[in-house]
Length: 397
Ligand SMILES: Cc1cc2nc3c(=O)[nH]c(=O)nc-3n(C[C@H](O)[C@H](O)[C@H](O)COP(=O)(O)OP(=O)(O)OC[C@H]3O[C@@H](n4cnc5c(N)ncnc54)[C@H](O)[C@@H]3O)c2cc1C
Image 1 (cartoon, rainbow, N blue to C red):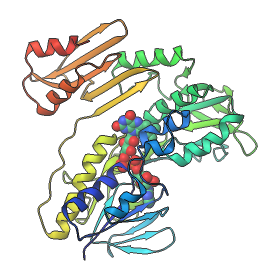
Image 2 (image 1 turned 45 degrees about the horizontal axis):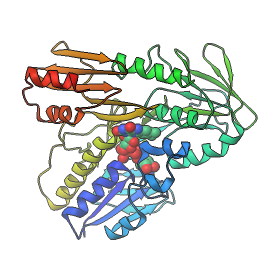
Image 3 (image 1 turned 120 degrees about the vertical axis):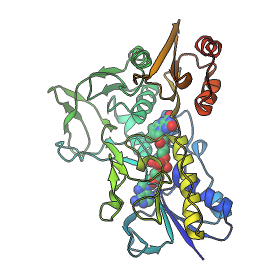
């Protein structure tokens, strides 16, 4: 019986497993999962920290799912090494698992920078897992202030959760612009929301030292200022979790695992999907689609079938920031010289259309998202957009 092994039990890994099982009842599927709990919606961990949702309410799959789909769920096991010549994965307990095809879906992780003095103290954490949230929860009753370094999605989620818990929050960005990956007007609106909610935003600063006797008591930032705090969230050091391939002939590119359009790595029987192939966040939905294609292609290799190409999936990011809804669809930067941007703003709302060759390339909005579903369909279809439709999208508030 052919054996498909998947490393990573989240959006990409699980959708790969589901895709394989939906097409083949016989093939053996093993899922190596460092985290012991069933897969959960990672983007909702902030809601668990703030107390708005319980852990079980963010479950992506139930424990029964693995059994019913006949997925051998190797929970709490870390894949430590891939031996591509022998088609083997070595686990942390030194068990060797042989595969016919392998899917790497290990996502991203934050490394605590060694060069920062005191960086091993308790209270420094990433913001990516339920285990980290549980650990942080223990510190909240004995902490007044939190420093959050970075301006990615985990930082935004952490900042809101800590404010909801009543903690003083400093959001520290290495750059001079808030959320440089977002449309500047939307970023400015979000910065204003942050400040309205009492978050202090500090620009052009990095973490340079952590003080405390075992536990974090204060941090020094690059300008020399010392800030008293009991929790430090690091989001600016997150990189794709590519360590597993470092001693293999599987190469990386721009920080993520290099893959072809069919998500195949340099080895014909090894695929990769999700955040691990990305320079930044692939996003939850993209990881799911990529996982599905990687699963189908891993199965195709087992059966000697044709590989599918992964579609170029536009960005779809929808979030709530201190009560303001935000959406970014497609290429909403509008920075290319071939693109034209149309913007409209009103009391508490702003929206932007990015047009390219008379099609909708991107859509961004804050405050009021009416019409985003139509915009999304237009981006996906690449259909000609009439001036009337443009007007409606700009005005559907
Ligand atoms: C706080 C937060 C908020 C977010 N908000 C949004 C949002 O609003 N919208 C959006 O689209 N995206 C959001 N994201 C990003 C989104 O969650 C990710 O893009 C998505 O989870 C990527 O899925 P993945 O399966 O590639 O990787 P991950 O979800 O990172 O999962 C990788 C899995 O692999 C496991 N793993 C890693 N290495 C090993 C190993 N060696 N052995 C065994 N297991 C291993 C990890 O433990 C983890 O379970 C957010 C992320 C965070 C953390």
